[in-house]
Image: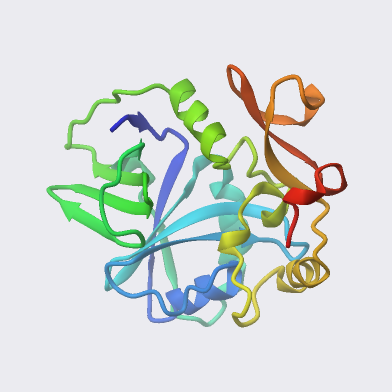
Length: 242
């Protein structure tokens, strides 16, 4: 099981009885029914449905621990903090107290849950992919490289922040449709995304291609023989929303 340091990861703790409802109203996935011990990913979006950040939400019982990204955290907090108003929500940045890791290629636990053991918390995101958070006193080493992880991402069509997942794009264009819940209540950016889904038109989409198959400027993650690219959906209509 390769483990790679997740250097861009950030972690905030959200406390208060309104925290889960608050996250639900600001992001694309249905979060309101998340239970203690569960983990779920969602996308924070602007009113124009552009991505602010892609988040992994741990329900710790008394609080939410939300893993986002250092490169996006300032923008995220600028967007969410003014919206708290009179709600019972308090957000604390605890990034510097923790280390972050990516584990992949091996099934570890029940999808949608997380496990905690001696300062090490592992979120089971998919069948062969986990995100782990450890306290600084837990000594772990990487046994894989970022290039190897990117090759795995390309093979499995996994988008990543800073590559495919950027503020230029909306969630559907970068392969995050599974995190856009089709039947939840109102959230920021919902009207635009709902219109795209109902019309089955999303403008752009994420695909895996051979390196010489598309214009170099469309490539978002380049591998040895294949790459990930974001292209106009009318160029590859068979891969668009169905």
